Image (cartoon, rainbow, N blue to C red; front, side, top):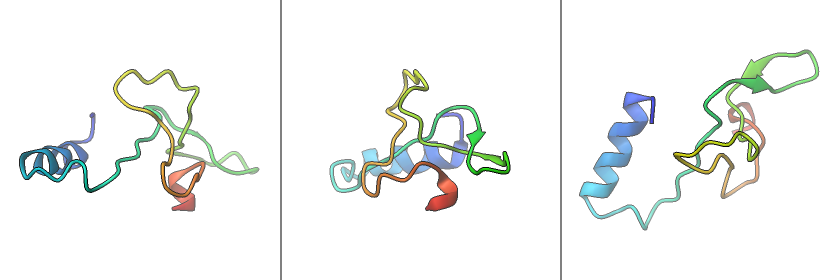
Length: 68
């Protein structure tokens, strides 16, 4: 993970044995267009070919962090 805050949270969950309790959704590693005006932001993009993690929202099926 490129974000040190997210990386720290994931490490904490793993060390405390809580990885199975919380689901983790990641975004694509690059910004994508999130609205019709062309505004960009973090998106859940299953076609992003992100090898580190699956880039989709497991719980709500949202398309971007802005929707969250």
